[in-house]
Length: 609
Image 1 (cartoon, one colour):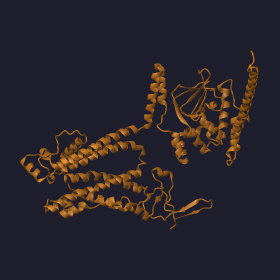
Image 2 (cartoon, helix red, strand yellow):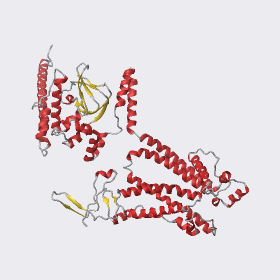
Image 3 (cartoon, helix red, strand yellow):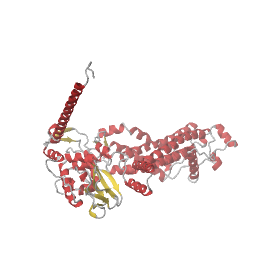
Image 4 (cartoon, helix red, strand yellow):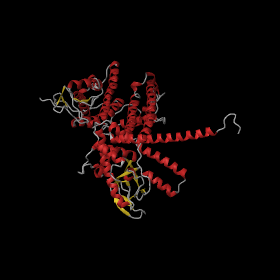
């Protein structure tokens, strides 16, 4: 069989990485790229992200839910499975035996996110991890107990007649075996493995899952406490003195006080379960009505344990709930904090009701993040960063003209797109809001992401033209003509992408086509926007254009000090320093001449004035 590279795509964050398993050797192709040879493919090895494994894990989740509820219930209320239910539970036991085998044949991802499909490595990884827990959880203790009690065969027939258990030693053994059946609950640890495997797929529902886990934990703890409170309330856990006091009527356990006996069956177990659940939640929440209370030693010891455990868990749940609610929407909290600052500003400025409404309306429309988007994006790999920015700004990338370098209606330079979009900030304007007026000092330009924008005449009376998604305006403020030449108003609710002067200057020097596109558009607009238009010429006298020319002509391997922009800056600095030196020297010469005149005119010692 030919060697084939085993690759897989995980549903989690591993989606972006191709993985090859178990490299035995490497070689280079004709282009010098490394080729990895993988172990031969084995048909019986299961991929961890395969459809079969997903369905197996989903089925396991429901089976674990059944086990988590039924095992404590059967142990606490001394109920056994018979007939069809017993066959079903035998099937569940067989399911987990098969699951152990599957864990020996399912690949895994190592710390370097490589997919490991080698059987020896899989077995070693499983043996060093969950194998011991899975083996203990699968011990057939219920089967052993039925064989010792000689009730295995009759369990398939719908029930067994009560038989004498024999000596006291055998009674204690059966009691221990019944408690050891709780080791099946170790299977619940598999849920953590399943959740870890699919947590990235469930990311969109993480908030609901965080809240849901708290309620599930509280309910399940109440279920455990209720089952075992009844278990420790039975006769086998009373001392001989307590049994005598019960028979004489000196003490009345809650089971006798409410139900007159402690024997449970399918008919009366529901009422007793509800009663113990009621006791569990009154204990955990420290309410403690007292109508069901512990009277025997075993009950009191377990009640103390339940109070301690319930107190810690319930207080932890309340604290965690508070944290979850606060961290559910950090951006909303940041927006609320911003609005509190705006409210303080309005109170201090004593604004009129109309101005107050306008200020609040504007800031409510603005997008406030609880994080620095640019910082997070810079930490990501380039390909992932580009994919995110294309997703967020795809509508303007397709329509804005300067993204198309070659004029072929395609995005030609992905690096340029990534660099420009990383510097964009979203701002919003309500309908009929004036974005800026003629004469303002411009420090940014805007790209329309959604909505319509009106270009108004000088008197803000008529609409000259309407700009749509993908159009941009305000470029004159970053091209040297800092005074705004247009009146711009939001025709509808608009979302704009703002590009500040400092960020755009870097882009203009690094990407010459952007500068040319902006200048061309600006000059064309001036004839429409204003009669006294001020155009920008593309000639060698333009310092910024010289930067563009040097950027076009510069070799990518040129030293940094040899590029034209740096030389231009150094020449200007040298000229300024020479002029300053000449001016200082002339000032010093004049001062020296004045001092000489003063010294010559001053009286000498012994001279009569």
